[in-house]
Image (cartoon, rainbow over the protein chains, first blue to last red):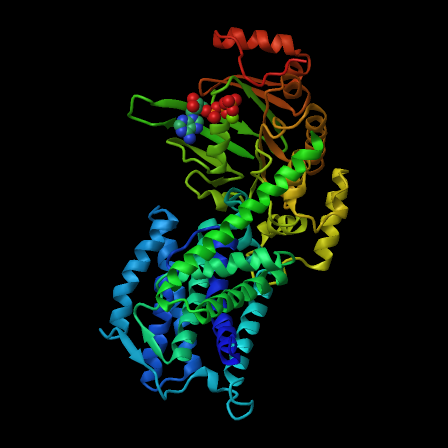
Length: 297
Length: 264
Ligand SMILES: Nc1ncnc2c1ncn2[C@@H]1O[C@H](COP(=O)(O)OP(=O)(O)OP(=O)(O)O)[C@@H](O)[C@H]1O
Ligand SMILES: [Mg+2]
């Protein structure tokens, strides 16, 4: 595999890691499978693309995408907590609705090109050698986000959010509105996903209405690969594992492409990776349980 | 401290399965009163406590806690004044979080959640002190995940969490039922100590009639959603378990039956 391809995989891995951290918040911290992700990823890309193509600042565009994602997450959370719709179904509904919303945001176009528009990856161009400036930007963003998330999860509010995923009964018994925590968690999660979408749009120089397909599976794959390969404790390691999982996922894909796999098989490969990763956890537990049982007998 | 007026709760109202769980219950607890609640399976003990805690909504009646009408208040809001320990040791704690994180969440009952540091140094010291009182060695395991604790340790921790910010009312629903006898006795002893120390108004549901008479200051007996007996003072102090069983039979016209009855 070429150095350029490896570099590309690294860049993509870091950018998609922002999305994977969002998925981590809903799936792991909140313990809620949230399928809004496929829609909110495109929403972020669409919002940013529209703003940037109108001459907007790429950083502000990313912030706007984050805010739009927050809103999408709120809608899913409210469908769940206020209307009593199951989380899985609430996510699917919002994902579907977002398809239309995204097309509206993109003014009916299925694709918005961003060629020759300013992008957030230009921050270091001219300062760092050609080819590494994009990587440096992606790295900076992910380090910042991991750091903030790390701090947040150790505040009182962060504790309450984590506990909600663990045991809602306990959270309510401690005087905390578990519904508000779900709202906060899903909003934050989809905010990050949308921010990642805006970064991808800038990276590949276009936003496409279909670019979110299977995103939630990719996010989940990154989270699980990270857990299996890099571990889950302590907290900073857990967050770093999500990022590394995302990078590893991209490297695997790049290698597969390099070996001649047609790009159209990517989704199939994603699904297989998640299946393997999911069952790996289960198999490991099963083995551990058996190992525990044996000496006792 | 708490006044319950004509409280009623039925499940599946209007269907063939209609079940009256709590039937026109009125009760008043003075500050510091420790009431043990006994009765057969399905008598409505848990439902009564759940209505007080806000887990289920009463169909009729009012609940007034320390002058505030909490009847329609959401569960989480009244939890600020009500501490709870559940029968299931898994219910009271977040298993994937550490002991100190659990305590910190319980400790934030008295202030709004914020982006301030989860655990401050002096709070950690305070948690350590409180844990030491339990006598289970948990004070040296602040950073252990709760998932690693035994059932008895978890119930003791939940008890501490329920009382670390002094509640106006403590609700214990068979909180020792899932524990082995020795651990159950230990947790009950901790309960009476903590309740006495802070003079907490308390409801404790139990199937252990001996505990029902020795712990606390008052005993109520429920049958088919009603309070059929309210014992306190000298009458309660001189009562034996056998007399209590006989009294139940007399008042209800049936035998006291439960799947977890302990008569020792
Ligand atoms: N969520 C519910 N849905 C339907 N019926 C219920 C529900 N909760 C309780 N009941 C019914 O209400 C009645 C009272 O139940 P409750 O759990 O309060 O009894 P209990 O006195 O706590 O019994 P036990 O000693 O077995 O714990 C029972 O007939 C029960 O079947
Ligand atoms: Mg019960």
